Every structure is written in C-alpha cells, then in structure tokens.
Image (cartoon, rainbow, N blue to C red; front, side, top):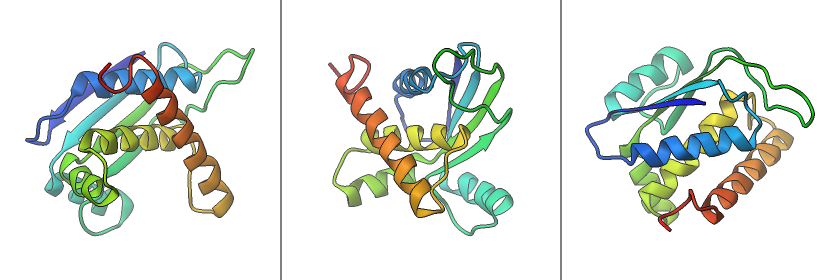
Length: 155
C-alpha cells in the first residue's frame, strides 16, 4: 500500500505514525495491497476553504475525505479491487481543540480522525442512526486493535 503523508499545517505531527495507522486500517479492511492513499495535514484557513468549496459548510473542520476510485472493504475469499482510495485532509489545530474537550491527547484525536476518514473513503457514513452505529462501532474496534498492537501507541 502506498500511503503518503504531507504536513502543510505548520504544526508538528507524527507523519510516520499516521502512515503506519493508515496501513493498519487499510489492511484490516482488506483494501488491495497496491491501493494508494494521501493524507495531508493543513491549517485552519485551508481546511475552511475546502469545507466551503466541497461540503458547502462554513468554517474549519477536523477531517475531510475525498474518495477517488470508490474502493470498498474487501471480503473474505475475494480479491479486493485495485485503485486509489483517495485523499484525507486533517487539521491538527482543530484536532487539538477537540482532544482537549474529549480529555485525550492530540495524537489520539488525530488517530481517531485518520480512522474515521479512511472509513468514509471506504463508503461508510453516519447520517442515519443505523449507519452511525455501524461506522462508529467499526471505528472503535479498529482504534482498539491499533492501540493493542505493536504499531499503536509508543511501545
């Protein structure tokens, strides 16, 4: 899997951690091993502009997902589809504020947003109660597995 992490936010992030987490999630979701993902960390002004342009919403947000080839999670005993998963745009400054409110670290919040964004790229949504339950349950499971793995928090 090709996972490129770009930091254009002006804030220090652990790009290697984000890259490892993205690969971990894509692997768990049975995404094709040659799939591509780009994660870009940006400042509040940039994500606010993207939010206005693409989501028709005002102000900065935490994460935006831009799917490319509409890849879906692979199924057991089925060859996953090859292609470009898409682009994730994260805003570490917004993540930092949300982390304070949630009572955990900015790193944990960025991990959560990365998993959340990848699930959106794979077609998950949370507009309806049943979708919300499925997506957030899967998100919690993946984060738990990540935190329990050698790739998770500093071990």
